[in-house]
Length: 525
Image 1 (cartoon, rainbow, N blue to C red):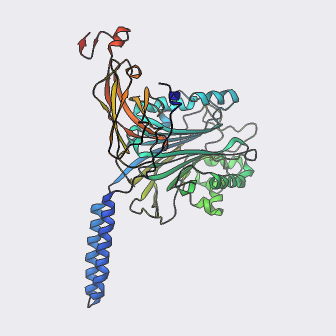
Image 2 (image 1 turned 90 degrees about the horizontal axis):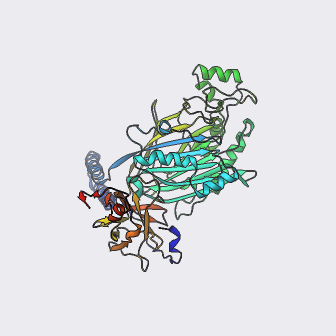
């Protein structure tokens, strides 16, 4: 079905607000307040300090037990991040090592930031029409493992891709992206930042992929560019409009900070002997963090991997000829949690951990553990080596039910019109421009549908109202297979409801056209 076929459709939005916190957490807070109020009133009546202390101990124990009983359970999700300056190269044939597909526990979200993707005028225009080659290889690799591209944003050579397990899609909401140019006084996008934000089970996350000014002497300019990006980027959303408004921010990319002062011989000797710690004191980013307060809010794991720039292509050897560029950790991944009411930081030899809480939602803390921070030396298509980091996000879900329930009705085949049902289960800013897509299991993105239908046009739905829509048989695939229905919200720019997988039967038309044998669906036709 042509996505532009609804040209005469009038848009209408509901004015509903987002979902609220669960009733169980409200009960927990209420009971806790009651017990503490009882405690304060009783203390005034106590005749001795020992009696008051004993009563306080009993009441606090009781209150804490109530909190643990009513508090929502904690879940841990795994985030895998990649940053790579690909130096206009085409992607390698295999990116499985880069994505570490078989790691345990399995990954829930992939975030991939690339810099210097080929952006010649003809190539860039063609990439606007169809997906670029880098997006293709990541989608082709991840889709068979039930990962779906949530969204992407590109500014010339900067590309940011986010993928999530299909099961998480209804809980990734309010997806927005933006970009900032910093090249040629802010008029050119060869340098700058692309960013994406969304809520994940109610927690506001932001990812910022940067390519900052090059060369040894421009460390201060790099800091100024990053500060400008933080100050000027805004998202078209009611809350968390700016990058630092988010509960968790990841800052990564080719940040271009170099190793100052040390001579080339000392650099090579330190790298070859594995004494990388000797270079940390002269790393420009680590030095700038000591001077700039806003940089100190960003955490980074230890640089226990070789500097990732500059290599001879298709080689593990540094390119020391010609301009004699010193090796440097130009490619980095850092993170920041909101400092309000925050938290404690723990550091040990294996992981780095940071805890974040929102001001008004302190019963929903977010604990960030970095499990890995390294480079992958096996890739040689660029003069940079890719840097990867994996994180465990331990959090309490603000919600665990989708906004919309959608399901197929009856038997589906291209021999007859089919029916689907959907029900809005919670208030949200719905629109008559919302649509329901039919996806083959293993689909790559929200636009990778076989067909779609608009939601009901004449009026917006009531909560828990069951709505039925017909799907024309001519739009249903002739061949059978496993499919899924997804409700796409234009305001949230995400799929907010998914059906269970269901079977579409091969049609008689497929037999007539010779697409399948005559014995189909267990019957001889």
